[in-house]
Image (tube, rainbow, N blue to C red; front, side, top):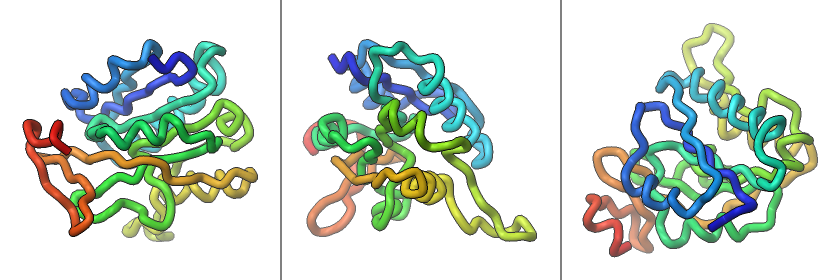
Length: 187
């Protein structure tokens, strides 16, 4: 059990995938936060979770592990749990089979210390659009990454996690691997 870590699952689709559910059983402190699948609401939901953690979560929880409902933890996801950095994120693969945000961090599986949650001013997550609102110019992940740096924190990547679409996308030395549920346990 990870008694110093609070697991918050961002459930935008109404359900949490069974592989994440099984992995989450290891955390005595866990909660599912339900929200909308709309992009602006995803950032609002993330901000609500960080604010809740900062202001109301049990004091014994020094860490917030915020995970999207379509993330699939694998053995190397535990590297994120052991990482001592104030802000860290697992490397996560996108629908394209490529790493999401290879030069930054992904908000899909991120660990934040209470110290960082208190020091980084809200909003922690936000989408930024072009002046006419037709193009995203900064995603919530990059926005958070910039906020961390502005507050004196250097986010790091630690561990990896799969991403569930109709299949789970995992990194392999020769490129992305697309696996069905029964194949993930062998990864």
